[in-house]
Image 1 (tube, one colour):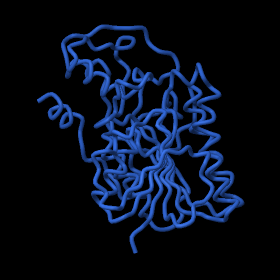
Image 2 (spheres, rainbow, N blue to C red):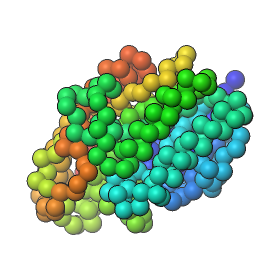
Image 3 (spheres, helix red, strand yellow):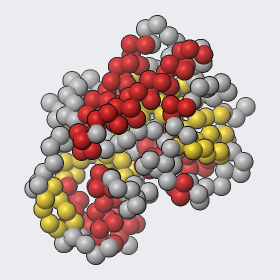
Image 4 (tube, rainbow, N blue to C red):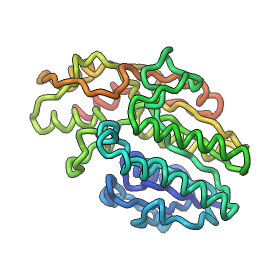
Length: 304
């Protein structure tokens, strides 16, 4: 029997790509919710679900029943590092309180669909070792990453008393279609890949923070979507976290030079890691997942 799944944040960058992948690669029925604070209905308007997709404007806090769902993909969040310093209460509600509300619904109603939670590699801060494994000490540099890690800890603690069934996916630096929305007032905190490509198309110089030597592990959003689907399919309760990255790094200045020769430097932003570099061995073994799309392939398609 086809699965019925819930996707929170379904109209966002990663959420819309996940919905697209589910409709293309499975026979599942999808209910998507989004409050459109950062996502847009335009991100899923092109999808033909043939009756398998329903999109509702709603907040996670309004969810009160999870009956009938096999899997809940929880992506709804405010994924913004720098603004999380300025409006910590807003980010706390979106990233932590709403997530705990979802868990409380599960426990109160005794409904335990598999929860695939979108976490972040930002919880590692400046890691001691690279490639970084899931056993790396946590060292949050900003409120956003701390909120993501708090949800992971709640999952870990509540599982001691309730039969939660979860997988936490720690995304490294996703990029790809719909990663940049110029109508979003916080677009400056979108994927750096999306920002660079947008500015290049507009004939504007690329703005590199600091000297650009900071390194990032870029993972294509379609690979991220595939990791979510694999996390839903693996049998048995895993109740653990997996890194989702490409397993290689590229400096920001190198990325900029591959896109344009018009580059300007701006002050470095505090609270951001110097390097992200995923060890993805646990995901290869535990989820049967590996990334397939290299940065070079994506850029070749975008730049012609």
